[in-house]
Image 1 (cartoon, one colour):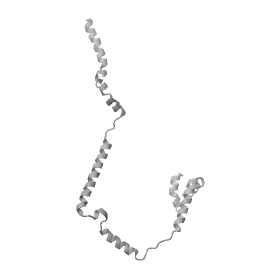
Image 2: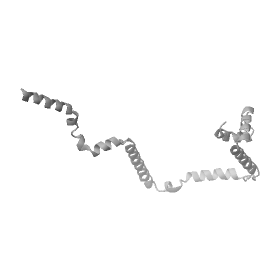
Image 3: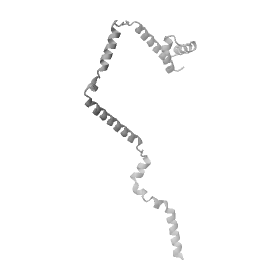
Image 4: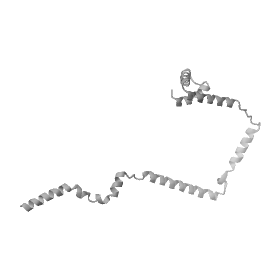
Length: 154
């Protein structure tokens, strides 16, 4: 049983929600794992501390006041959106344009062709590669010298 899996099961163990087999496996693991045992002790302390907290009972009018404030404040738009309508569309348009520009920039960066080291070497010595056809056909040129020497002998 791995420690990561055990950490997920420690709360269920404390709450008595594990079946018999999983509880036995976890207890065997806890017997040999100081780290998990320490975490279990910390969880027990946290549970005990939370049990000692005072329960706060809301006032009798809490529910009525809550829903009244919710209804009142939800009709009033908070923040910058509460301003005159003339400000809404330019702000939204600017935000949309910014988002579109950012999306285009990301696509351009991602789709940019990658330059390999070999391409960089070729680009730095481009003048050497301009005569590549001549170098590639060097065998033919050597044969040409032999053919010309035959013409001279004749």
